[in-house]
Length: 273
Image (cartoon, rainbow, N blue to C red; front, top):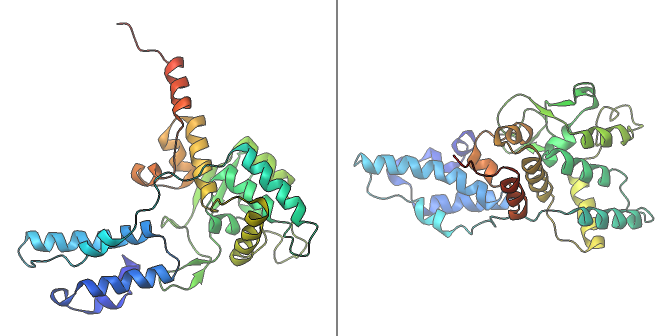
């Protein structure tokens, strides 16, 4: 809502807003690299307001609805990386390490994202001082290079609006963290992954070309959430790890396999009573 309030259409009288105002908003958000699903959720708030005004007979037309209908649908099922995909990425990373374009932190970041479900910005904002190895818990206090309400890059806060959140770490994530070397630069030594958002993005594009795989970085988050659901079998526990506040948002990230559900049914037969 705060982001919507910064846009120029909020300076107009409601009765004078037209479809073109929201087409402009959509274009501005697309130019900023925002996904269609995010734009849809943002405009959905405004559509609801217009619908309420129509119910009260204060307006006769909802200019947001046609803009929402014109937005392409994001694919419902994301690509889930398999163990073989991670091995292909690892081989490609080893090949790139022999070139001048190598990035020694790339594969650590990729593996850690797959084991924690952290967003790219959260991962780059993760600090060694925020990890409790004894309790297997990490505190996400800030993010790296995430746009603030004005569109500027910031390192304050988390995406879901909380000043910080704690996430449980799997034994695999703890083992991985114990292997990651620390940066030599004193200014970066507390960063688990001491590179910038842009550097990680460029390095990952090179890795995908070398590996000949088309996965988005965000597919790592889908992969982690799906794996967590299969292991924990509890939506509330998975939401605690991923930071989602409702099932509708988390549903987009979890893609259980039919074979896994079939095994659960076999392990838990129906009562004969």
